[in-house]
Length: 386
Image (cartoon, rainbow, N blue to C red; front, side, top):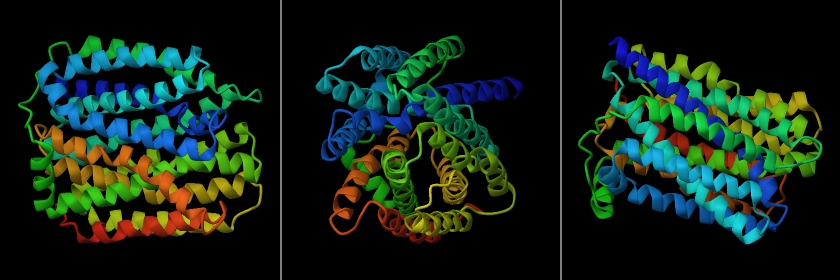
């Protein structure tokens, strides 16, 4: 049991490093791409990234079954190192767009492999606690990552510095995986064709509702990641240093409350009520952002902090519920659940494109808030595990 606990903590550290190298450039990616792409092209780049990521999820099970989880993640990290070097050294816009799209797709494969490591070593009686700990670690990276990124960008607005930092973090990530999992025993992964997978999900009403709720949450995240930094910078007028402070405060609910909510889900309560309340808080508070035009770090930090209280609650309840009901062998189902994230990056630009036909950037927050409230419906219809 002690050995299992040790490896869980090791995977938590791996998850933190992986997430930090993803997050450091995340909130500035759209601003970097905006330097050589108009808003419509920017949307298409994110949609292409989403399509590439979905393709990776579709082939991931076959790839992992063939190579093994350990070999797959080692190769993926090595490829990612080469891709980040390209982002740092390349100046051609078309090449940069291609590199950005490819590294996004490779990143989701690395994340899926880490998920499999954690799922294999998770004790079934403590799923909520372990997922809460793992989620708190990942979300700690989400807190410090934007601050590091904004400091690296600085007054000169050199966005490539964030890719240098991410490249550097890939080397300790590679070492930790190489050092700790050479003897990893892959479970007997189930194999489902896309048609079988669709049929399996459609017959499991709770799983389908959970995926619908997760798609709503991930669309909220995606829209906020792509468009809110540009809005805060170009419309409200915050500097990148100020945006970094706002983002740090905004993301604090994730490491502060998710571990405790995961324990509550294990010991006292079911997941659906907390999940629904989370969506309600997230949606209503996001709508209020449309009516906030003052350039105040304090005001924007508090309002965005409230939106993430709701998002953090909904997210950890979905994670806990999913891993209580899905086997380690079901990599295709896990891939489908994680596929909601790249799919959301396909939806977010469409929301922006169509939303701007009827309103301004300011009131897009109200539209996103209203759409977020949709998550309440599938959340309340899920059968609790308690």
